[in-house]
Image (spheres, rainbow, N blue to C red):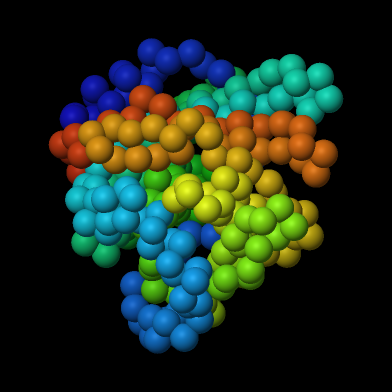
Length: 275
């Protein structure tokens, strides 16, 4: 897919654009470099069994290794937790590619009348607004690597739970009889903490909670609408709810295309000067 076709696909969309935060998480991109041995020492057999059952149900690790490129729309819906009323939405148009040692990404979105493009090609992170290159003083530039890791991480689950530096712990069953797998990360990768809740007879977790490094608030999510495209499975709706069970945010993934041929220039900062 050529660059101009990619851009026209986006600009024909509805320009919705309230500035909403991305679901915070740590991206595990370490490839060896001494963390594999540490990770191996911190993988609990029961936790590994639950994760591997999940992976096997999706076609095994080879399924993820066969993922070369993906395009999809991530739409964040914000709700009033009390009334349940939809308050605003924001779509992001995502293109990713797995290259040797690199997870490249390009993310496009409208914020009001401003068109923002962020990207990472494996060597350079960059961001543009309305065709103008942003600087390191701009928030959208500062967040590029985080956002690029975010979009790669979500579509990469559960396979990325086998990455070097990912520590898996089995914390037994909670008071609802669910198996709890706690996930944290090796030194230098991140200090976020995750909890995956499994029930007998289902390979997908029924709930995923996470706590971002430096915060005390737990983020509760339910994974709903499990979808597949060309045999590749993903979560169609990540439903965020508060401690009272009230939904306040849903992140939907749709318009998914798997392994289309992409022009590598999609991820180049130079290509964005024409937006």
